[in-house]
Length: 191
Ligand code: GRF
Picture: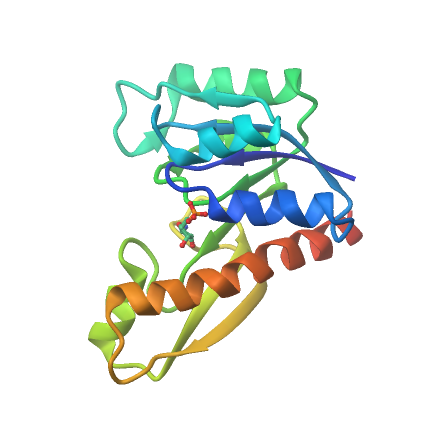
């Protein structure tokens, strides 16, 4: 069984989808704890409501990465809560070798495009700007690159002629909520 530490910086709808899959018996896993680098992030609110340890991780002095003291604290806290697996769910920081090595092969991420297309920020806008007819989401293992690493699950959505970034992202989000639990089921089976 996976004991999952979730990391997020925003709404946490993917975390909620994972928690619901567990509660419904569709995923044999446990949420060990939930981290956010944003004190007011809704993901922490959701975690408190669902009764999971909700931890604000002050990542200063760094702005875009999880490194140094905060990284060491995260590793320590994950272990204290019995975590043995990490799911990045809208975590807006780059994870560095300290965490990658502590949980080698046991960190996954979700990204709102069909990787390797449109890595990095604003994947929905990138897809619209590129004029593609189809995009989607990807759950993948995390390596030292940005949105690289072996792909576990992808789900596609159409890009419609009158789409805005918002309508497209809403369509992708709905698929993410299916893809993330599905990917975790696949990973859990292989471990
Ligand atoms: C998702 O679109 C995910 O692909 C990206 O960040 C967003 C997080 O959404 N990495 P939420 O916080 O899970 O609602």
